[in-house]
Image 1 (cartoon, rainbow, N blue to C red):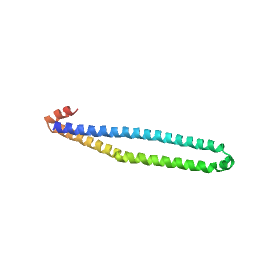
Image 2 (cartoon, rainbow, N blue to C red):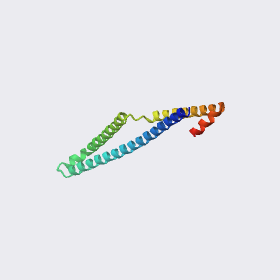
Image 3 (tube, helix red, strand yellow):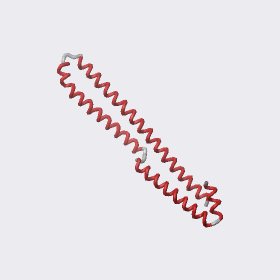
Image 4 (tube, one colour):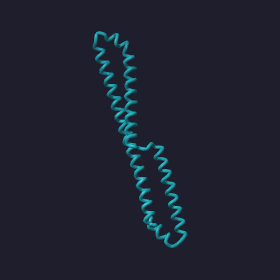
Length: 141
């Protein structure tokens, strides 16, 4: 019985370790995604400034200055599109890695806690039913 209980507790420990590991991986992926988003945003802003600088040197600068607002809007629109595409790529990557969403992790944590309570109840019930129960509880602790 103690072996079964130890195996069960080891299984619970492995599940909890896996959940913690997934949470750490998720946080790392979020940090990386945010870093790449900022890099892409900076790159887009640099390109907009370079284009504006080049345009200001041309003979048609007056006309282009009038139209620059439209270009800025377009650049902002492109930046948002790049950001959305990047976010979609991150979501696809997480999906292909089979990383559970936060709600699933929370559900698994609740289930682990519920199973842990049941194990404690079984230990308590076994401890009151005879002499062997005390020895198995000591082996678990």
